[in-house]
Length: 402
Image 1 (cartoon, helix red, strand yellow):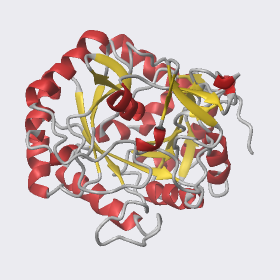
Image 2 (cartoon, rainbow, N blue to C red):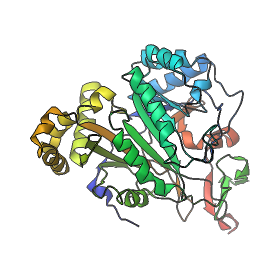
Image 3 (cartoon, rainbow, N blue to C red):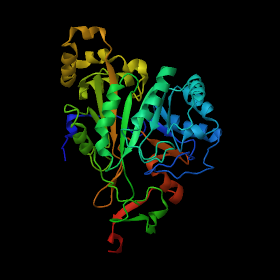
């Protein structure tokens, strides 16, 4: 596997109380089944609007954020979704809806924009049993991705992001998905790849204090032969088959393993025809630090208006050797001075890893922190809170008998 040195990249400054995003769950109800989902689908899973406002109160009292990921479940199934978006906007936060898109219509999109919506992150992958798209692979699903991207572009000034869960048998599609995103760099701002994870019952036992816990009741219990140990560098190596210069600029490390890449960010600059280069550690550091200096928060999603200003980002090449290469590549053609240069983010997320001694290597400074019982907890392990009241601890098989 490819080896990446974390010290070559900017460690994103996000932490528990000062972050770019927070994760609001107004509902656990969903209108689609996705393999690998970390949340149980509950038909009566809607929170009341008052409960949602209390969750937002917890965020604003304990944590700085730039954006709020409105997730679930699927938040578009919530009857108060317009009020939820408006409430997030009222608190001077960016409302970002995380959805499978099934319930989105042009009329609802107009209303959401009027309520203050900043952007969408659409979850689309081949293991969703999506009506009308069953049996389609990730490349064939690019047609559906384009439909949503075009819908947002036609409405105007709404950030467009896509995420998909990556499995061992789908990872080879990633270069083709990124090639599609490149060709649509003018209307797609972010691509996110989330590496499949599940509870490992083969090597570990799970406990709360002295009590052994049966993890089979959790939806993210390992029940397939799919690998649950994919790593971010492995994905970078695959991507370089089509983009040899593809290189990250920033990362979040693990809570137990400092050189692990839990969130690995790449920023690329290009037109629909060509990628001219990538941001380096210094340029992404400047962007995060200037945003915090000016707005007292770290930057989450950028607006389509800002991602069209790639030539402005090139000015940071004064500090950034990697960006200077992009500058030279772009202005090698003097006519490019009249062309738009677009910025696009690519994020690879490597959720919880189990170390040999049972420690669970979480995302250190994870943006996807949510609220449970008035406390901040990891959203990807919410089912443990709901079933057991706390996160469980893992130990190697037989360890607790010794």
